[in-house]
Length: 266
Image (cartoon, rainbow, N blue to C red):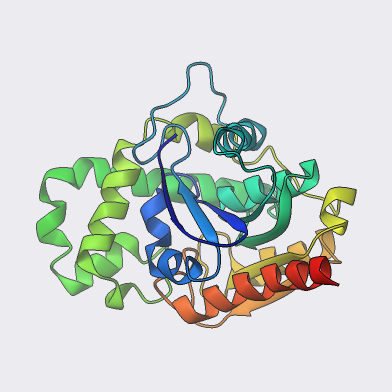
C-alpha cells in the first residue's frame, strides 16, 4: 500500500472511499499533521496502490490491509478517520480494538435497498463517464458548468472546486483497478454499536448536501444504529466534505481525538 506520512503526535490514519485516493484528504491532512502523526493511505486497488490478488473488495478485507500497514509501520493503535467506504473501514477497525478513536465522514452501511441501488448506480455512472471522457477531461474541467455537472454529486460546492483536484478525482475513479469488487460489496456491511466502539470516542459527521449517501435519511439512520456516537452535521458540505469546509472537518476530527487524549491523561 502506498501512503503519505507527515506530522508528529499520536498516530492518525486517513482512509478514502470507493474510487477515491489519498489525495482527497489534502485540504485537511496538512492541518492534522500539526497535531498528529498522519498516515494517509491508498487502499489496495486505488490511487497508487496495486490491487491485492484475491481481494474481495470487502470492508473486512480493507481493514485487514490497513492493520497490516500499521503493523509494518510499528503502530499498534491509531486514531482512524474515514470517508464513505473508508468510514466503514474506520468503524470496523474500531470494532477490532485497533482504533484510539473513530471519525467517520458519511460512512457506508446506513442505507436500505433503495439507497444501495442509488449509491451503486451513481458511483458506477461517475466511473463510466470518467472513463469515456478521460482524454478530454482536462479541457472539460476548465469550464465551470461542466465541472459542476461532472463532480457535483460528490461535493457540496462543486463550482468552487479547484479544477486540478476535480480532474485528479475523475482520473482516480476511472483508473481504479479495485473499483468493481468494492462496488459489488458496497451494500454488504452494516455497523452496530459494538463493544469496541463503545470503549472509544466515535464521531459520525455528515455533509448536509450529501447527495450520494443522502444526508436526511442516512444520517438519521446512523443516529439509530450508533446511538452513543457523537453525530455532527456539516452545513453546505457534500459527500467528500474536505474542500467544502476544511475548518469544520478539522474540528470534527480534533474534537474526537481530544476526547481520547483527555481521557488518557486523566
